[in-house]
Image 1 (cartoon, rainbow, N blue to C red):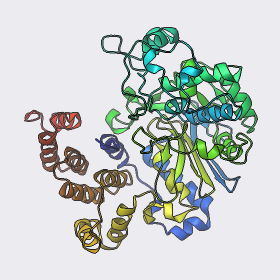
Image 2 (image 1 turned 90 degrees about the vertical axis):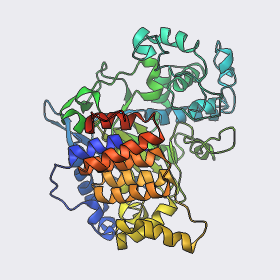
Image 3 (image 1 turned 90 degrees about the horizontal axis):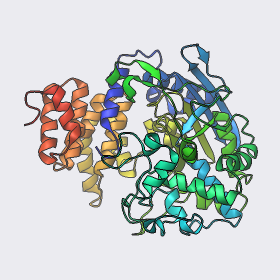
Image 4 (image 1 turned 120 degrees about the vertical axis):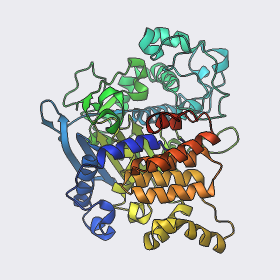
Length: 508
């Protein structure tokens, strides 16, 4: 699958389709009613999401024009003891920690101690020859090409290098591994990047990176609950993390049974994923970041939030420690962690939304835009919020005429504008979003459109097959999985589904 894992969406949908809702879906409510009373409408929307996604506990904070305009705490922080989530509850933010590491590096830039365009080898001695040219910016944006310290080479263990032998052994081993690609050529999410950044902060910050970030960010932004640590550490008011049984991230594939999850962040990896905080803490940090408390120089924030460039000049998916949501309107920069915690900052709209949960698989990054839409109506799903421009044009018409008319609508748009084109991945993402929003038949129509426009893509048939499988149409699911395999014999997703749907003919 590309861009979106429909296998995961499918499992979520199966698990959630049988949960009754006592409220009208958010997409059916008039947009003006939501924007007139945002906090009440957001609470209703979030409680619906919690019910559908079976999220035990959740916090939300909204920052508007430099002030916290909404704080909310819902559900349960600790299921076994029935401890409710409060505004003081602390959640692990996992990889959203990287955004704090990005700020720390920019603070060192302002101190005159770091140049993000310089090679990391200027600041760290003893790096392998192949690593010498990797820049600090490439570490921050996951374009370094370094081998991943969490993935052991073949034949050298089954877990992470850190888990198999500890920090020192992992560091020694990863330096012997070949580069994945030339620096700046590609993007690959990689924890080695942030281990190196931690070492740079340790050296140039004059204290361990955890203390540097605590002093320069937690204290400066008045974040009393923020702390580094994992399941081994005693952290006041910390919510218990949960996942679905067997380590899966969706309810259906494990029968919906929850189990406790342990956050295991080796100390030298905590620049990448070791921070715990409340939504209010993160909101205060965002305010301090934007009002000049954390970064003093004019232009520093723009540098922090501007995507880097690949060697060919195209923009990377990340800015300096921040994933970017690039689009013509209402761009955002984000912190996203563990499929359970996320925050989006909308720089052009003077808005930020923080959603923290204690469920791996809650994926709040998928619905933060909808919360923001209660302040910026263009971001509401009913208005096509977050959709690319071409998809928005189709969306506007299908709301009037029905999703089954999508092929005719596309033809009409092409007749009006010979340059009109809709991208395969954009349609695929839209179809997946419809599935998450319980619009299964509509998603099938969009996937059918994608197949008709891109008939030689294995991915389009694979997506359509999964939608039919969810719909209970076994024959059409099998037919489309088989067609996907004809186009791409290495499509493991189709193979796995056919083993269940058609065990006798799975290999055909």
